[in-house]
Structures are given as C-alpha cells and as structure tokens.
Image 1 (cartoon, rainbow, N blue to C red):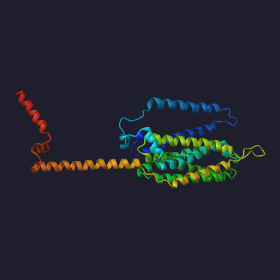
Image 2 (image 1 turned 30 degrees about the vertical axis):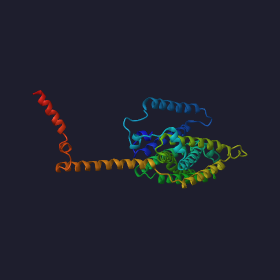
Image 3 (image 1 turned 90 degrees about the vertical axis):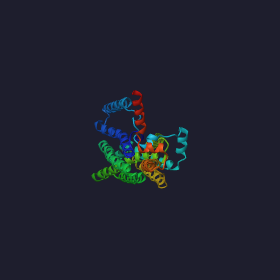
Image 4 (image 1 turned 120 degrees about the horizontal axis):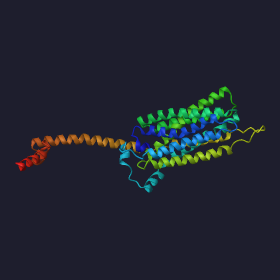
Length: 352
C-alpha cells in the first residue's frame, strides 16, 4: 500500500501507521476486557461490538479504497517492475539477507504476539488481575503509536533503515527482558510500575520494529514487487506467532496445590532466548537499500539531463549565430517559431 500510494519520504511512516492499525485492533480487544465480568456473562456484548466494527471497516474498504492513485507517487512506483512472478520469487529466495531479516522478524513478531495473546495467563499466577492485563495491553499499543511516528519519520528523512532497526531491536529486547524478570516475583506496587515501564519500552521499540522490517525487505529485494516480500514476512511472522502462542501454554508449570494456575516463567524464558538467537542473525545482515539507491540514481540522472540538456541547447544556439552549423538548422535554433511563421505566411498568400 505504501509503495503505491506514498512518496519516497512518506513510505516508512505510512507503513508504520498501517502496521500500528493492525495492532490497534488488539488494543480494542484489551479495552473491551474492561466490560467483561469475571463470570463472562457480558462476553457476547464484547464479541458483538468487535464484530460490528470489523464488518463496517471491511465494507468501507471494499467500496471506497482503490488499489492505486491516478498519478504514481514515486519514481520506483512509476517505473514498476519488469520481473515475472517466477523471477521475483527466485530473486527473493536467493537473497541471503532477506532470509536473515525474515528469521529475525518472524521470531521477534512471534514472541511479541504470544506475549500479548497470553498476557492474562502470564500475569494471573503472579497476582495480577484482568484490569492489570488490560492496562498493560493498552499501554503497549498506545505508546506504540508514538514509536511508529517517531521511527517512521526518522527512517523516511534519513534513510538510515538499518540503524533504526537495530535501535528498535535492542529496545524490544530490553523491554522483554525486564518483563520476564518481573514475572519471577509476585505483584506489588513496586513491580506493577516496573512491568508498566517494561511495556512502555516494548511499545516504543517493538511496534516500530514491524514496519521497519517490512520496508527493509522491500529495499533489499528491489526490483521485486513490494507486495511479495511483505506478504512473505507477514506469512512467516503469523506462523511464528501461532507456534509461540500454542507453545506458551504447553510449557506452563502445573497448577499449584490450591488449584491456582502455574507460572509462565518457562515459556517466557524460551521466548526471550529465541529472540536473542534471532537477533544474532541480524549481526550478519549487510543488505543494500537497492530501492533507495535506484531512486537516488534516477533523480540524479534526471537532474543531470536537465542541466546538460539546457547547456547543449545554449551552445548550439551560439554556434548557429556564429555560422558554425548548417543554415536550415541555424535558422530553427535562432528562431524556433520560424516554421509556424512561414506556414502562416503561406496561408496568407493563398487567401490573397
């Protein structure tokens, strides 16, 4: 979407906001948790409201949204791609840096998705309530919007995609580590605020990690159509999220003697270690921002053509005035309207 609709200095921010809107749906689910009672008697209200929103937005998108704007917003989107689907798949699958990015993104996205999906199960054994879970979920999503805007704008203006990705990755690892540490202790006022701070860090850094990865995937696989690497990352990230979401409850400790749920420390440790291993692949990442380089080269080419084209025209005109080129070309260069004037004179003679 960003590739087709937004310019070179707007794409990352547009992708960030679009990715945030996807995660924002999760925030809505957390917000609806406030109206669900302990016995679940109002659960149907929450489900009905969420379903209504989904239907309205889906119908509006189908009826009002077109695939491309009338005018291409950037040089790369105007040029498009000449690669077939087979050639695009080959170019992407033979790009080792795309695989490194895919591993890092998928595992990071999967662990974050599992933490959000299983947040209630993770917090309850440590004495936290459903309200606490909703507060933490809303925090990571709300702060995530700020992170998306900040890092999206910085990446668009500076084109320092890899630096921004590394900052987000390290920040996400820090937030995840603090959260895992907090789950080794029972709830107190002190640990409540520590966990809240961890989710603030996670929101600022982990949410922008998603759109930055998608933009870098488009950059390093160019001229492959942007939809192909983005769809691939979306697929692998979703699969990783499913795997970790199912794995977390399986690794949960057995219930306590009083039948209270067991701790989720083991799955959290597994998720954290998996995230650290995935980030180690990012150390070897040396992908080139091909799309940005191509757009810059095209811009320089257009500027040079414009500059030297005007210079050549002036030189030919001076040569024509000095008699260094044939008379017919010289007359046209000195007086570009001469053919029109001669044609008008001819029509005037015929009228007479």
